[in-house]
Figure (cartoon, helix red, strand yellow):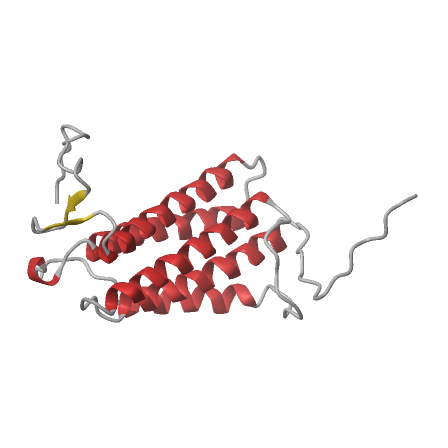
Length: 202
């Protein structure tokens, strides 16, 4: 499909409404807009990780694999955004849909990457390195996108796979953050429950 964008601004949304696929106008704070808007925000966060990954001086097969995974995730997130922007009455047989295949692929990746990692004995705190920190940010935005899709599904039929996909993608971001930290030999910061403040020096 060829898409041509001649002008960015249309003034059509100046009154707080926007158009869905098929032409229906809805408020910009409607559950459907919140859902695919948060997916768009997630896609932007993934783009930041890809940019940081390319900026690192030392090239490696690990970083090349991370780039390929995130490139594919960005494409899938755009597909998901289009799916969420398409209400039932505008759906067509040719519409691209998130399905079980993408979920299974992520599960296979996590199973493979987990073999490189030590079992956790506490929760991981974001930090330690730029890539892992921004991957944690992707995880948190992904969880919010998942919540927005759940909220939307209470009002309209969106099918099971968008929610399942986002649930598994949040897990993948968590594993990727640990995996890249391991291979870059960065520290992993663990939660210390009830950690007492350090005594002040006199």
